[in-house]
Length: 266
Image (cartoon, rainbow, N blue to C red; front, side, top):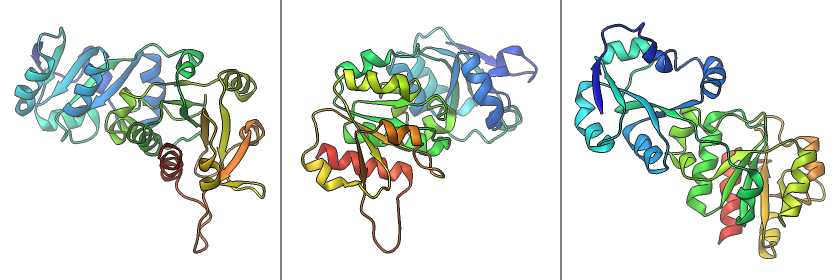
């Protein structure tokens, strides 16, 4: 662990941390650069335990003792700056201890991920990073085995997703799923029943579905605004709904995934 005090924000090594609040920019630059940002010492620790490699770390003087204990003998440069300097660089007040620029792990092969799984969640086109992170936290806490995200879904390794998930996105196996024409045969060949969470006249109530659930179930959840696509509904073997009251037609996608997982794993 090498400590380097920041003297200029123009240093190329600090570019990973510039304009972190520009969501549109980060969506492009982080995956293209093969990196993601881990925010907070807790999340950095989980990333390290998952075997992820840090490219660099950014922090202020007060957090150095905790980082030294965490990073140990890891070969990494820790950039240290005054709080105001760090805010100028990142675009926000760095109050969670540290940021780490981490190398992205290689994507998992969907077929290998499905091989030993029994309960998975497929997240279709959910663009809100908070919801994506919350879904991963539910998956980790309620005992599902994996998450698959569609090509247009928000990046699970975006800083907000990682933070909201409490770092569980670094622990739960996940990968990108191809379009539905390719995904359906893959899921069926692995023995999965595709259960879409949606409103439909022929939908099965969640409690009834859970009482006789197949051995392997892929729960599909969709975007908050439009719900599941027509392609996702056509791909489903069954449509499952959570009965609601008081004129409410549905739950937030993250809440719905948690309720469905609880019903299927208890």
